Image (cartoon, rainbow, N blue to C red):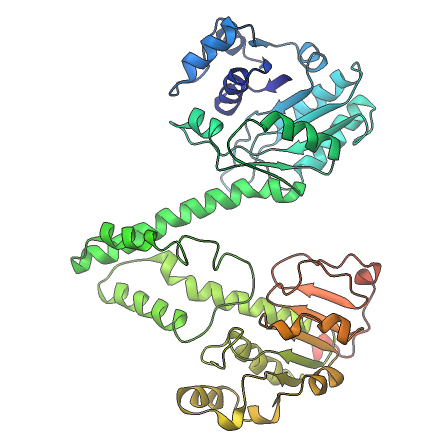
Length: 457
């Protein structure tokens, strides 16, 4: 393919050299005459392992060149990558002026080009940038998005020092697009790389780099806090974390990484608090570990706010235990939510076939009776009874018997705390706790008649 890459800094230079090594013809574009001259003499604009050899080979093969002429680059290529800088402010916001400036230049050049053109945003940008870039190019070119051109989001996952290896052996290739034609072009471009190719929604692709890097930062901080605690106790922290990382079933795995309801149960709250206490007893400051429970409580409050926002007083809670398939009510986060709702005057009914209050004993019974002494008046194993008297059904765990709730009880408002449904065409109203509504039915946007005034509580 013929490729133009705008911005010959770190990401742009690596991309240009690697694409050329794959047999594509690449034109780099930059306002810096120095960078253009370096590429045109077969030399890289950065210092990085293996990059010098790739630039030399690409130049000698006639596959790698550079220019400052935007029109020349756009009109002679099929794909234009935007890889210019997005410097950050002290408050975390990004300066996207370089992105938007390049987009306008590409648009002006596209006005003079025939044929479909793909613009790929390689720079790290916030969600919404793709839409703005599309608008700028459409305005500058006079052409129609989806018909004459398409803007895709294609974030890079490169580490300095190993960027060439990372480019050629990525963990995955991610492209966000709403254009089937552009998706086909990008899949063909990356087809020879030994990695899974993922085509997804544009906003998903735009946010991924931030999610990845924030988690990488969190891992470093968590490991360091564990190390600080271990040091005061004379424990080898590297042995601890080595064993931690060997657990690929829970610790290093997709488990626990799906957005849903707050955690509960007998282990996570108790053991997290115990580790915090151990750190405090040894005068070790561990800000991340100390704020885990606070973050969990904030998420629990989000569920409360979401339920109240539905504007109905009759609430049916489906599931009381902290997760499916158990009757363990200790530290179940929904118990705290129910307690708050009762205090605010909501009418509550609860269904849980695993929980019969009359049979609760020991710690389980003590916990519930200390939280909601009259729980037996609200809990039943009759799902129909709960659903018939409730206006809002709150799904709190992923019991299989809840799968057909929308079909069994049409017209009920559903508040989903666990992403019970990935897709849902439902003629009532649906809202998820930590994800956008999946309901595509027009009724989703219909105004709901509220049966209480917020200010009453």
